[in-house]
Length: 350
Ligand code: C5P
Image (cartoon, rainbow, N blue to C red; front, side, top):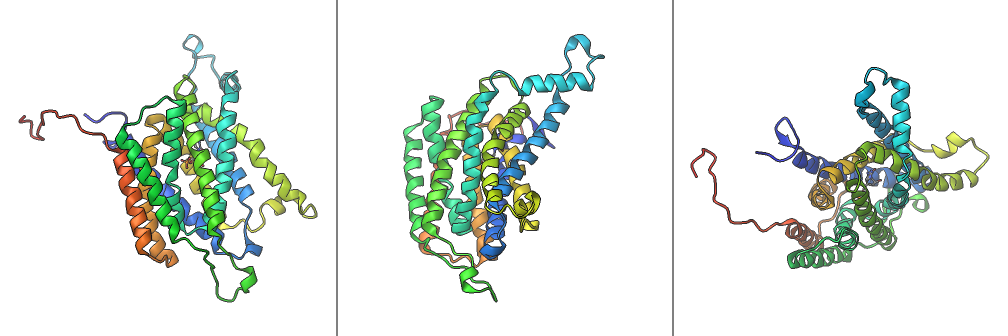
């Protein structure tokens, strides 16, 4: 029988895996397009996008948390809206809520760095490099969760690092030139800057993911309450660059400074990011960070094919070689040697 909850007979575990893979690719492509398709003078502010992401994600989580509150069995009738609000406030501002401040700060840094990386690397190159998350996640799982890795998994991690390094070889500086846009106002990509950003984002991703998993699985607190706490602690670090942005041009009003050039593609990026954040939380709760790594490796293939079709991405021998090494390494890392059990055939004969 299929393990865990399912939707229309499909195990939630696999459904979330595939959805996360598609979301990851969509986010990379939409974010990349939203950044490189406009000249720097018409670019939107990533700081505003990160702030909007946290506000929207926090609000959705708050609504779900409110809806899920259980009435105390003693006074089911008397448990009205005020009672629910009080209970939820008590849950959100619990004595251990400070624990979420650590992943909150790390995720805000990571979400800002993602914009830097995706603006300076080709979408497919970014997607492959972002696989180093598996390496950092494994490292922090060993350190913080005392997880044991098999020698095969260590081997896979080594291959992963090699694969990413190979992909980097072909990532030179690329200049995106649009018709009719003056050259000094075109988006220029800096591969080194992009790579530094992606490497740091992988570090924060690994630490934040493992820390979140540790907090979530070591207590009874509802996932959605944890998400609200995460978003609340994210507000301060997310607001800091926004203040800086406003201070740099105080003549204009708050709203027009923050939402300057914030068009449809910027909102599309934020929406896909919000969806991804909620999905990531579900994946961490119902499986773990390793399954998450597997999902993102599927995204390499999707982003790669889409990049070729949409952005005239140049397929090189080194890119293919590096990507293949990364995909094989991810598969190897997740490969559980099967125990030899008698096979029960579909029709019931053993
Ligand atoms: O790349 P990675 O899987 O580490 O990305 C996690 C993303 O999911 C981040 O953008 C983070 O803000 C978001 N997240 C979230 N809520 C959680 C866990 C992660 O919004 N509980």
